[in-house]
Image 1 (cartoon, rainbow, N blue to C red):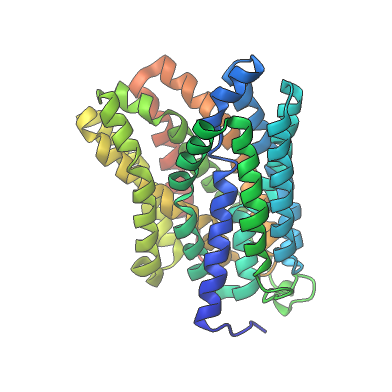
Image 2 (image 1 turned 135 degrees about the horizontal axis):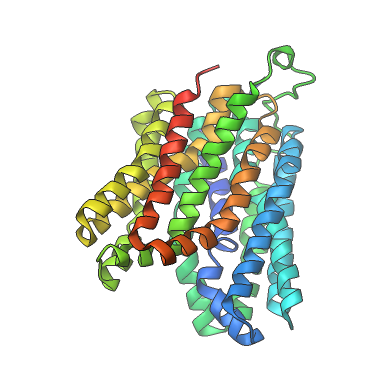
Length: 387
């Protein structure tokens, strides 16, 4: 039986989990952009090695996702999220104490374990365990808050770097995990479980989701994260290839975060009346349309490109939580989302290298790579049907 939570409780849960998701992303995904070069200079290595260690973290997170999802399905969402804060903190302390490159790789590997049990997929599964089929709104709510992870994380990392140094910045993020994120995750309902296991649920005896639907959805998520990560790593360079100035490229890049949040507000208000497949299909079309505009009009289209790409990416992030729920139901949701997200984590680790090589070889024409991937994901979404 799904617990009847009053609006104040619901708002507290969404606010707490949205904040901890923000800390999780800010202290992992968004660290390299600010701290990779100082880390490399201090250890006397190329920054490529630091980004390689970050790729190891992404691969580790992919391995842990299905296990974490199964634990959340069993009612351990709060415990898993609290454990993630401890693991994140341990990894960050290892980074701060790194005397050499092998220890730095070890620190990032531990952070990868934290990512596997402490970011969106586990958050979505935890909300599904609390709200069942009604989790779409709360899922959108935490992405609205965590959409500001880069807006908060980059300046805060930069401030700690300028004031103390990169090692102290890592310690600072570890303390934020321990004294802010951990207590907030502790506020989540203990043992609340709206979703029975597939073995005990009457729904569990029904038909399993088709393999084709699962593979199509896994491809959509992998395509989304490939394009998102490729643009996050190379957007300024891409826009300059299109003819934008450095200042224009940076200003356009700054629009992606607000565009993501604005699109999520649209999903939370107007588009919530429709099946999540509708909003996901529209969102998948955004990047290819943006690519056509950039190639057609060059530098002046930089702002339009950033807004369209950001808006599409914002809604597709929500779709990672809402589509499996709406298509396959809440039974076994956590483990299923863990499996669906594993390929995207692996491709995400390779995206900066692959798109960087394409950009170096083809210039602006490299955008057709991500545009083609975006079109393929839209076709996959069109092939999906409500079950």
